[in-house]
Length: 145
Picture 1 (cartoon, one colour):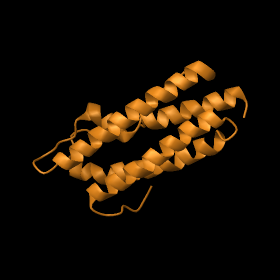
Picture 2: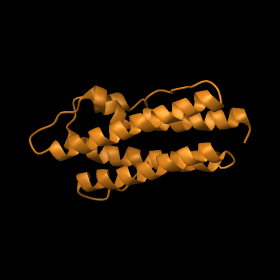
Picture 3: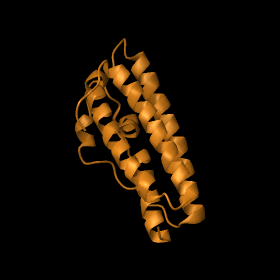
Picture 4: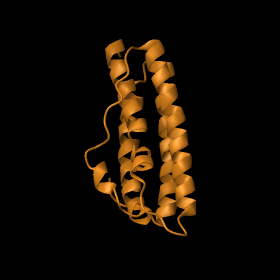
């Protein structure tokens, strides 16, 4: 893949990680109640992991491929304000499944750049692990995505 194509795919990777629903919810502050402690802690862990990975991807882009384009949060995320965390778990699972599909495409697009592909594969593995956590918190496997 050409350097511009690699940069585009790496920026897509960065956007998927940095503009995820868990990252958005750190600003939206969903409504929680007693009993949500496990979900709140899991979401905080996911966000911390995503922040660290996004930072590494951004540094890699700057060092090897050019400018960073952070992208925007999806347009439907503002609809999550004032909703309860229990309700949002289903949306979190669906968004995570969509992110996994997009990360798989990024990983495929970056195969010719070994270091970039490794970052994409790491992001994909983390996203799959986070999906399992979110499905467990939702108490069921969510169909859709």
